[in-house]
Amino acid sequence: MPYNIAMVSDFFFPQPGGVESHIYQLSTKLIDRGHKVIVITHAYEGRTGVRYLTNGLKVYHVPFLVMYRSASFPTVFSFFPIFRNIVIREEIEIVHGHASLSSLCHEAILHARTMGLRTVFTDHSLFGFADAASILTNKLLKFTLSDVDHVICVSHTCKENTVLRASLDPLMVSVIPNAVVAENFRPLFHPSYPNLSEFGTNVVPLPQHLGHHDTITIVVISRLFYNKGTDLLVAAIPRILANHPNVRFIIAGSGPKAIDLEQMLEKNVLQDRVEMLGPVRHEEVRDVMVRGHIYLHPSLTEAFGTVIVEAASCGLYVVCTQVGGIPEVLPAHMTVFAKPEEDDLVAATGRAIAALRANKVRTEDFHDQVKKWYSWTDVARRTERVYDGISGVLSEADFYGYEAADAASWSATRGRAGVQSFALIDRLKRYYGCGIWAGKLFCLCVVIDYLLFLFLEIWAPRDAIDIARNWPKKVKKERAISAGSTFR
Image (spheres, one colour):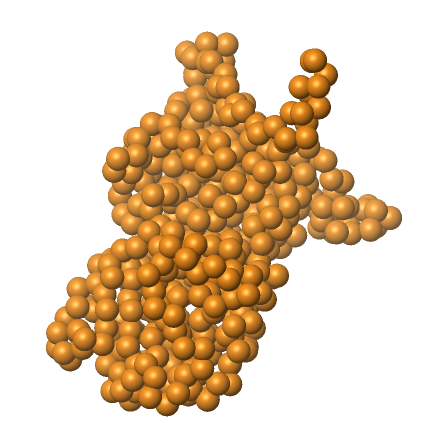
C-alpha cells in the first residue's frame, strides 16, 4: 500500500555526501513505487523555502542556524510548530530520520511520536564509547531510539554498533546497505556503452594493459576531515611517490585538512605529481574516477563506504582501510585492505600497483558485478517492507521472522521488538529507563513536548492548515491512449 513519507535530516543536497545521496536515491525509488515522499532539511546558502527536485520530490528547507559540519543547532521544541505544519499539509504517515548527528532527525522523531506517527531511523555512522563526544551522542541516540518503531543500519558492523550504543533489541534493527546507480558510474571501456561521446567527458582513454613504465593514477575523493584519514594520506603520499616513480595522484574534496595536504605538497615539491581539484559535485565524481586506475580510501571509521562501490563500478582497483563496515562492501578480488596505519597503507598501495602492472586484476569486469549486487530499487523494496511491518500490513511473525506456532513463547521471552505504543504513559516508561538522571530529563522533555502539541492543536487548529496538492503522476502511454479512445 502507498505511504506518505517524510525523510528528515540535516544532511541533504546541495551538500555532497553519502547520506545526502542515500536520501535522494531512496526517495526517488520510493516515489517510483507509488509512495509520496518529501524531504525536510535545513536551509543552505541559496536554498530556502520549498524546492522541487527530479520526479516530483519536494524539499522543505527550514531556516535554522547551522552549527557544525552542516548540522543545525539543536532547539528541541522550536522545530515543532514548523514540523507539525509540514506534516499536516503533506498528510504524512511515516517519519524517516537519517544520521545520528542530525538534530533535525532526532527532534522530528520525538515530535512525530507525540503526534501519533510511525517512525523509522537509519544510522549511517559508527561511534565509539569512550570519548566525551561519543558518550553524549550515544545518550542522545538512546533518547531517540527508545521510542522509535524500527531502525535500519547500512551494514552489519553498523548494526552491532547501534545496538550496543542504544541498548536495542537486535530484532528491531534491519540491515539494508547503500547502493549506487551503476549507469552513472560506468568505465570508459565497456561493451554496454560503446558510444564514448555520450559520456560528456574529455578524458583521454587509459591503456587497458599497463606496462612497467606506464603511469598509474591514484584517485582520492573524500571530505578532508580527520575521520576520513586525511592525516594518514598526508603521511603516505610522499612515500608512495618515492617508491613508485611512474605514479601520480588526483585528489578531490574540501575540508579543514586541505591546508595540510597543500603544505605537504609544497614541502616535498610534489605539485607536478599530485593534482588538487578541490570540491566536486556528485555528478562530476564519475568523470574524475575514470581518470585513474586505483582508488585510495584511507578512512579511519566508516559504516559502509558508498564511494568505494562507485569506484569499483568505474573499473578502479580499490585500496582501503580495514575498518568498520568496509570489509562487507566489496569482495577480495576488487580490494586490497590495509590497517589504518601509514606503513601498511603504503605497502597495500604498493601491492595494488604491482598487481595492475602484472595484469593480475580484471577491472573491466567490476562494473557488471557491482551493477548486479547493488541496486536502489532493491533498497527501496526492502525499506518498503519495513514500512509494511511497522504499519501492520505484515504480521508480527512475518516481519520479525518467527513461526506463527511459536508466537506465544516468543512473545513471552522476547516481548514485542518494535511498533511502539503511542500512549503517553507507555512512552514515559520507555524513556524513564534511559538512566538515573537522563531518564527523568527525557520524561520531562516528552511531557513538555506533549503539552506543546496540545497548545498547537488549539492555537493552530488542523482545519486552518491547507492540504498541499500532490505532484501529478506520470500517466503511462498505453493508459493515456486507451483513455483517449474511450472519450471518442
